[in-house]
Image (tube, rainbow, N blue to C red):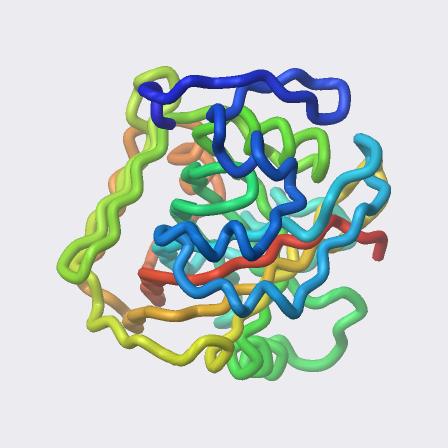
Length: 297
């Protein structure tokens, strides 16, 4: 979080939160004039968002503008094997972990950086279990193949720390997601990726790796989807995240990824899940993201 900026206080639901003065949230309150956003050189080409109308919709905190736009973002994700029996202990019924290999499911550790978005720049980390699609039947292997082919995965998020108060408040009160304030640093360039997560200045987890060869693609030629399945006020909801990937690199069975657990909450969570072998590394250097509001299943 940038401490050099002046801040102003805004209301979200019943919460009062400080946001950067003159920033996107202060100026637009989640309902931006895209012509104004297009003038921001940091936002890049935003034509992708022009076909997605924002609507004022009812939420658990009152009317809010949705979906949420992330004009410039990047992330690094490692997908790890974990024993099904340990994953089941962390999943609320009726969610079922998707079995990748006999007796093993998948856990993702992801670091996100959002440099231009509706609720101002912030970083985020996530630990999630890949789960079966609701009401899915048939072999797990077939479902996994279809998910890879369609680039659409279903997941249950267990941890989602962020490094700004507006991101925490929106996530906790708007979506009931497991967010807390942390210090998160994410650096992605052509050669190296470095990400760290600390809470109360105590290092929790760090990730370093060489950046896989990056490929730039046309807008909307490589769309990805993730659906979070989570409880909101004790009712099951699904939240769709759409990603327009613009520059990415990937590696199966990467050898030189260093994930160091320093003993904080996220490290302990990965230990409890038995997350071990890294199956896949994904680095997205540049992407545009649309975060929808939760809807009832």
